[in-house]
Image 1 (cartoon, one colour):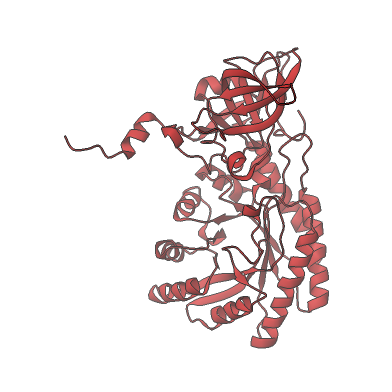
Image 2 (cartoon, helix red, strand yellow):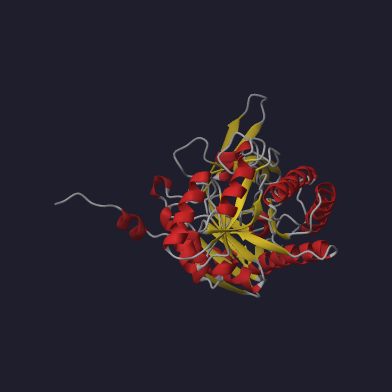
Length: 446
């Protein structure tokens, strides 16, 4: 079906979608809709590709590089187990993500804790289980973490997140290295160097390195080149001031994936060799030895491996100002299972996947069932004019952030997540039930 869809996806003679050898109609019948479907083979293969391509690219320089899976993209205990089996590491950004990762068997030493406002509870738990690194984000956190570590008689391994001033990625909400935002310590103002020195001097902290993340949905490596130059210049400056060369550098990631047939993506190969070259150039300019490196592909592992199945309900036709028509196709989900369209203006594609259609296509908009006019799943897509109530519709490239950002707006249950492989399925996350929703409510006294 093309690179927009998971690699095991295809259509049968009757036009029905199958993924991992399983018919989409069978999945919808078994688990209901909306339903997130994850191609296990695809997801594992993408993890392995980043692992192997970065090992090859940085291996030319005899440098070690670790690949961190983004728990925020999509995390459940079985995915944590897949990532560990593929020799990846794992980023978490909350106590819940940490506990799920541990439940899945990811060793604590392979987990990194992120966040701009970590709670005392999160920091304490991370130290108790022995996470491999905590990425500190403020002077407040440095002081608090140092105190908690000394109370527990441990030493906290830390990286300092720096703001390089390099803007990259798509929507402004996912660009994370310009000055006017909440993450990191500014390189330009000297805060980054001061934070590195504070961590080096703190008795309860072990300064492991520098962390930088410049954004998400990144297509060009030019920004990485500039960011790497600034990070390694900071590393050299710290060496000259303190006399210690930090052993690790994390250059982030956030590589782009394809969401529509005409969209673009950044391949693991291009990302790996481009970033290795950028580090090589930066080191030749700043001096110093090759550090232990790490990268964070972000959505690029989970996103393309997943899709969402919906059941069509109502179909309407509206007249536009230019005398053309738009077909509105309402499905049984919406902004409760995919927040990215209304939040970021994200573009997606969609197809009818339960049958063949020989009807002409018409400009269509896939919308949800919620009480918001902005409740749009796919803003513009060509769909058959004969799409009708009961049809199954699939939206590809929803493996990242769909379930993670899902909510219960209008008290709608969140969908289940199922993985498919070799003609079989595995339930990863069950669907919310009405009893779940009622259990959260505290009724008035009789």
